[in-house]
Length: 484
Ligand code: HEM
Ligand code: HEM
Ligand SMILES: [Fe+2]
Image 1 (cartoon, rainbow, N blue to C red):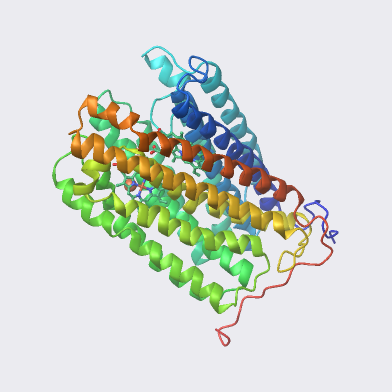
Image 2 (image 1 turned 180 degrees about the horizontal axis):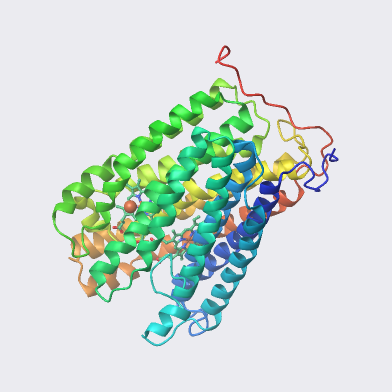
């Protein structure tokens, strides 16, 4: 029996111990994301800052690649976290899973060092293979691409093998099917062509079909599991919701891809298809809010893990606002003509990635830490609860401040550069130098500092929460059909 408040991991199964490793790397990379984001933000205010040493393009690349990788590590960790619990048997091929973790992490370190120390190369195939591929968000060089495919195949073997041998729950089934699509899509980002329209066409298959289809379904599975674990919501209810969400998500998100095909040289029918289907994308996100809020209300917010539940609720709203509302704002071609590629896009990108994905990984971090400390108490009146509460508040306050500042700058760009200036080169610079733009960049940086403070507090909280607790976790049992 593990002692309460002591980090021994004695109550954890093999998959969960492996998950802890993924989570550790995830939080470190989250820190790197914040650091490089702050440096890139400062370069908007002081263009000479680190010029020639760590240019904006490099900082930006490190910022968004760190984000993609920490979220992927967080997702992989979360899946390992629930795997044995959900399937009822030990992870199949756990030894391989552990080995792959080390290979994956080492590869990430090498890629980051090359980004930092080598940065750029000649316009030849060797640069694509060894330095970076130049495709935003998935810049990793070709050798690392192939490595990622191998790692993901091993991960898939662990997950599908375990569910196939153990219990194949509905959550497990959706998860396995989704992982096939998620991994398969990555291949679309490896296709090399010097034709920029074709390159963008396939690149969006990875970016859009990840975040607006496969990642959404993945967090849907995680939310379903999280609601059962933290509140004891009836499995039948969450699984029914999950199926509805998946149907709506794929129904709108797949053809919603067309909202990236307005201006890249693809046929004109994408205006109609992209505009129509992407406008429907907020619908499943509304369903997710209703789902989470209904369950939480039904259980009178009583949970075995208050921080995790708070982050799950934050996810439902963050996803709805960041992806649903902020996405909808610029998804019709008539509007996108003016907003495309302005800070408006960055505003949406920040709120959506943070609201939909960072939040869910953080919820799982709290679930993991609870068990790691021997199933410690984490409900109301938790000792030192101020830390998690301030962390969630500061992270959201900082994010909202950044998002609003970016929106104002973006609005100014659409007006001055596009509507009035007619998208000329001159108008672009006029918009960049405008007072409203510059002030937006200033306030984004202030929001960045608030966010950074929230991150530091979050990391500190994750290292200390539950240490001084002596009570055992509140047990939640899955409610029976009769009480629902
Ligand atoms: C969690 C889900 C989502 C995430 C993480 C996300 C993230 C992003 C990011 C990072 C970009 C910028 C890509 C670039 O660098 O060019 C982007 C662009 C875009 N997103 Fe989303 N998004 C999500 C969901 C949505 C939804 C549901 C809609 C529509 C209802 C939407 C509409 C758009 C549009 C129209 C663009 C293109 C903006 C432009 O023309 O510059 N997004 N998204
Ligand atoms: C300290 C906080 C942060 C600061 C100061 C910051 C700053 C920046 C800057 C300067 C850029 C480049 C924008 C451009 O090209 O004009 C950027 C891009 C981006 N950041 Fe952040 N960031 C922060 C946190 C985050 C977080 C927490 C997330 C998501 C979890 C995030 C997601 C993104 C995305 C998706 C882009 C690309 C947006 C696009 O292409 O439109 N950032 N960030
Ligand atoms: Fe999209």
